[in-house]
Length: 222
Image (cartoon, rainbow, N blue to C red; front, top):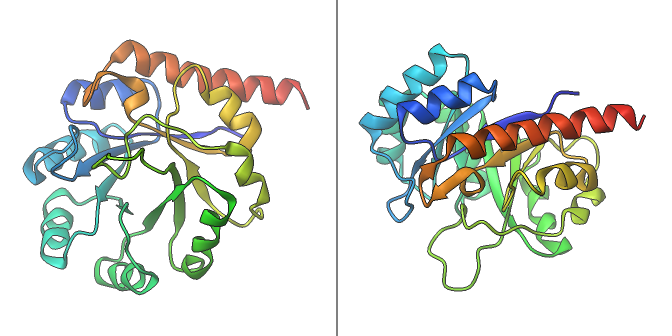
C-alpha cells in the first residue's frame, strides 16, 4: 500500500511545488498566529490554488477558531479538508461538517495509552484522526514542536480507525514509525525544515524517499 503523505505548514509557492514534484498527497496550511508557519487567508488561498492545480489535496489547519474565521477561510481558500487541532468537541465537529460540507480531520495529542480513549466520542463524526505528540511544557503550539510519542500505543487501535501519524517525524525515524505503528498516512512539518517555518527542499526529498523505502521494505518482508 502506498502511504499517504501530508506536508504541513507550507507557506511559499516553491514549497508547494516541491511537495507536488515529490508526489505528496496533501498540503497543509496553518492558521494560528503563534505558529511560525502561520499564513494569511489570502496567501493560503493563492497557495491552495497552486496546490490543487498540481493534484494536492489542501488542508486548512485551525485551532479552536470561531465560525466567522472559518467562514472566511472556507470561502476564500476553498480547502479540501478542515483539520481541527484544538479542543473542539464532538458537537463542534458535527456542526462544522454540516456547515461546510467538508471532511474533517480531528487532531489529538498523545503521550499515554489513555489519551487514545478520547477518540471514542468522535468516531462516526470525524472523517480521519491525526495523532500528534503532546507539546512540551511551556510550548504555545499544539503541533509542529518536533517531538514524538510512543508509536507502539497505536497497536491497540482497531483497523476501522482512519488516522494520520504526526509528531516529530523526520527522514531518520519515519521508516521505524511506519513499521512500529502500522500507520498508512503520515504528516510532517518541522521535520522538513531548516529553521522554524522554512521548508528545506532537500529535507523534503529525503523524507519522501524514506517513506517510499519503508514501503518497499515492508513489501519485501511479506
